[in-house]
Length: 115
Image (tube, rainbow, N blue to C red):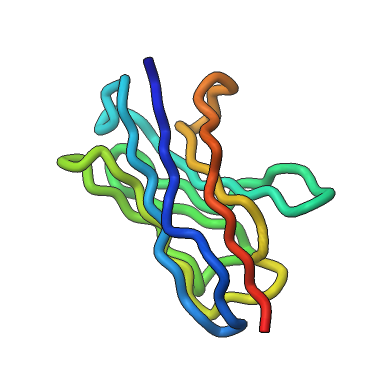
């Protein structure tokens, strides 16, 4: 069955960096477009960044220039490099295919940006 396992979150001060990882299994990773999403307390889940199977990327305006999505098809892994973190980036971060499949959501990884 499909599994998406996120990791790399933590507590970081404003201006700091984190690198999130998502390891996928149970489907042909290299054929799929992948995305990172996040959900802050009391808010709806939102799209953060996409990476297509051909490597093209896109990101939300709120993270442009700060976050970078990448993938390693040999490791079935998608990454999110987050720099210049702000308190408003605090959320649980999830990966999923693009468009998202409701059956694929994992547990996510918590990112907290606070001084």
